[in-house]
Amino acid sequence: MTDHDVIVIGSGVVGASCAYELALAGRRVLVVDRGNLTSGTTASGEGNVLVSDKPPAPSSTSHARA
Image 1 (cartoon, rainbow, N blue to C red):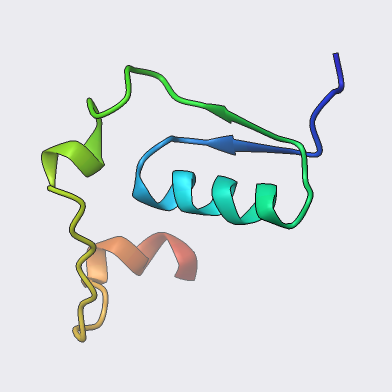
Image 2: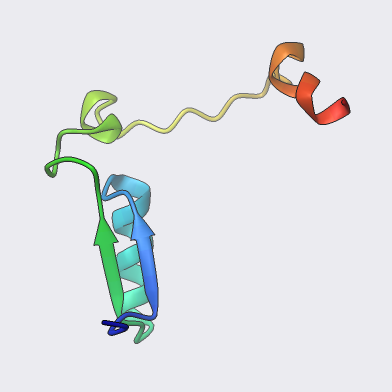
């Protein structure tokens, strides 16, 4: 069963948008999600994407230095 060119993990706003654009470009797309539509992070966050102008916290980058 290799009927797909691309597999998109997650059907939230980003995954669905990527899948849509890939399909428009002629790719055969499979979208998989762990839950039902409108039950994940996008639904909980009302589709908002936060862009922060602050640097990452030291604890989130400490593993990269090791």
